[in-house]
Length: 61
Image (cartoon, rainbow, N blue to C red; front, side, top):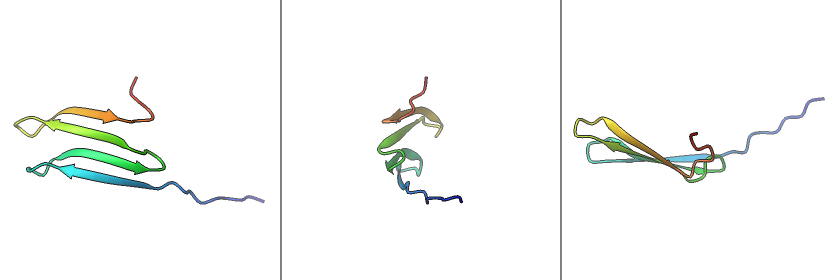
């Protein structure tokens, strides 16, 4: 007999945009990636030039 349990993870993702409509910040909250924040910096040509991640449970090597 197999028994399964429903997944109980929940996550909210909040996006912040600048005056040009570009994503500048993404915050994930909930049981999976609580308070993981990604911030983007853009140059004058609207290219992403920097990505900063904080509070990640899996930081890059």
